[in-house]
Length: 361
Ligand SMILES: Nc1ncnc2c1ncn2[C@@H]1O[C@H](COP(=O)(O)OP(=O)(O)OP(=O)(O)O)[C@@H](O)[C@H]1O
Ligand SMILES: [Mg+2]
Image (cartoon, rainbow, N blue to C red; front, side):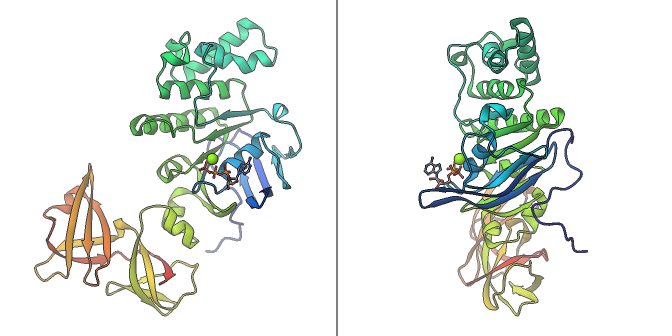
């Protein structure tokens, strides 16, 4: 069944759903000759977490700052809860924002950092301290309330920054690479925690990152941007399995390029015919973009492929294999399936029949 829903429309059933909807309507932003936002439209459902993913300079922060009121758009509109807020100043927008760099006030305790926004809103001291402590508890830092930023780890500081953003009960949460200064393990833990809290609070969230694993792990939907434009927005699995453009196929996930031939209906790759994803009009000699996990490698004495290297990644294993035409591919399998593969081994490589994106060679 084909859907008539435009690509940018939000699905009806997402997270908690009691947040506020956000609409980016054809936003444009120029910085001199740079077209930082080039007709960006996204419809974010109440309570949804949209991860905005793309390479450096593609306009992610520009979009986030526009929503936060920290920068203007030159054309287009921003709606929050159905209201046009395009020209509403930042301090009237009720947004909670967390940036990459630790932006806590160094001379204030965690509690005072979190209470700061409430103080600005005129809340009395007893109430704002209570609210700050509740919010610190939400991010798992109740016992650290009296610590100063320099007495906390990077991960803890970012939790305080998250608590500070949430304490004002914002209508939208804006997170601009909040994890990128942290080491890999803390980063993974904290992203799961942010997601858990976001779902629990039910707050509509725009999460900007250039880390695809992070985007796929966190987003209800992931929007991939390139040069100020939205290439595709879709739930993570759909984005990964059914990329709509060459850019998305190559940017999201590891991708092999394997010489192939097509007449337009399907494509012959490594002696096998597999379906083509829509999005290309190339014919004849092409390259098929094949995910590592869709390559099957098996030991065979008369195999024409040669294993170059094998690397173990815990439960998974990746093998680099040279094909007879010298194309080097990466295959990924479970560690148990990889038994017996070793550098120099002769192997056969087959392709799983998952549809692939095809590009001109
Ligand atoms: N204040 C500014 N003045 C001039 N150019 C700007 C300004 N802010 C952003 N740009 C330009 O606009 C484009 C988009 O920048 P933006 O910061 O939105 O990218 P990004 O996707 O967030 O990148 P990164 O992943 O590196 O943070 C870039 O070419 C950038 O140089
Ligand atoms: Mg940025």
